[in-house]
Length: 115
Length: 115
Image (cartoon, rainbow over all chains, first blue to last red; front, side, top):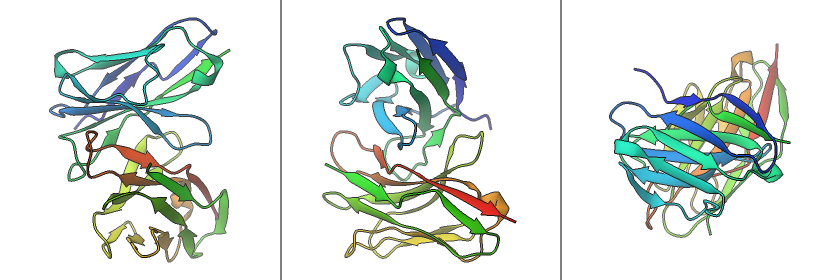
């Protein structure tokens, strides 16, 4: 079974530029999560989707971050414009359904460096 | 709000030594508790979990017991191997609210095991 795929794996941009990350979850997984992991910290949830609807985006900086999940499958996370403090690893995870009966499977992440 | 505190790292051990990584949490209600592991170059993987007080999660020789009275979920292994070198994250899962499935992570503990 294929795991969660993410691209690109690495991205370097200058501040005020825009960037987009892509995630393809495990087939059949209805719930998709985006986490931000700053160096030396644990992952922090940015947004949770159930199919193509947003369940929780309370920690998403909506003035610069946006995310969508078209047709309840792939998802993109965009930052526009980027700030230095956005340098982090962006992790995508998916699960069959919400809740803790179902394991969250994580992708390898996209490492973003903002200069 | 919910929070997780892990012992400061890095932790360096010799092969076959006993491992303890401390984890304490703050939460309302009855959260689920998890340990995730991130091996070098790989994504986060679920190591073990416990969903109610006094439950013991175990996997690959690791174990942790959900202690509600001390709000702790310490990770232990009797004899570590070089292959256990990784970053370990303690996490809490909120069973209620609108973001069912949301994980709150600790800051991670780097473990290095020498032959």
